[in-house]
Length: 382
Figure 1 (cartoon, rainbow, N blue to C red):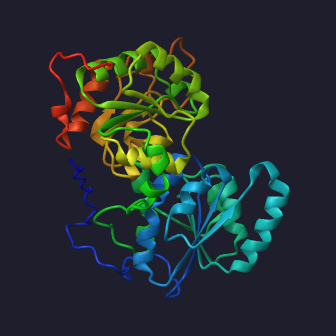
Figure 2 (figure 1 turned 180 degrees about the horizontal axis):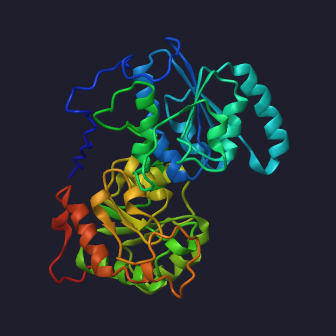
């Protein structure tokens, strides 16, 4: 059965969204067809969430151009967006030559407006370097590393755990753009699935996509928990299970394969590019894993994602559309935002139970009437 996916409404005050910006609400004056520079070089999750601004800007400012300044690690996902006109890359390992090249490019590009979405010294520096007459950044109290000094316009202050996606949308509201009825991250249409046809040929639908790790040790769930979750899903449902992640988790994935011994467990760990990963999530019935970039890729392709939260805030970073699929435990120390837990065995992640995760997975499956894939005591693990 084809998945019926619905978008969350973003209508502002119940009014119908139109396709032009409101001069009444616009905080800055721009030419009719402005040249925008978006500066966001951060994590995959941040970049993915920021992509939703592109179509909104294009709708509000017909004839505008959008250039995105990125680092190589996320270049692939930004390049894929059909409405981004130009890509600039800051190659941090070769920063001296890259800085020289960017200085020349930024100064000759004549940008009208910069959206500095990263709020660090580096992004502020590039914003200032552009020479754009309008440079919009975060409020002083939300910025870091004196970022606010480099910009001459600032969005309003928000509280610490205000959802990051909505925080980004504040930039387009500052430009006078109305809240959209739904968000477009640039992954719609058949192009993504066509380019990932080879990877997708290795999986059978319907399936659950499981992410095995993150770049933060403190966000990681545990091998024994993953092993039990996978075993239970294979026994209690007729679904396939697809493991995904970077090559750093390849050995773990192989150990899970050996422990599970099921032909319905498919190992794609270390075998996908970012765009192929997006295609896998687009075809998945539901995704599950820790708070990481993959969670926001899943959200961008409109697949429910069960997020295991420990040291970070679900209120701030829960994937768009899957805010109700968060699994966390009540800990006095959370959210601590520490990459390495000072306590033994990371209790905020250790105390997340397989039962709680399964409950949210079935809740996600219910959105697409796939709960019928759940079996009553029949062993389908082979």
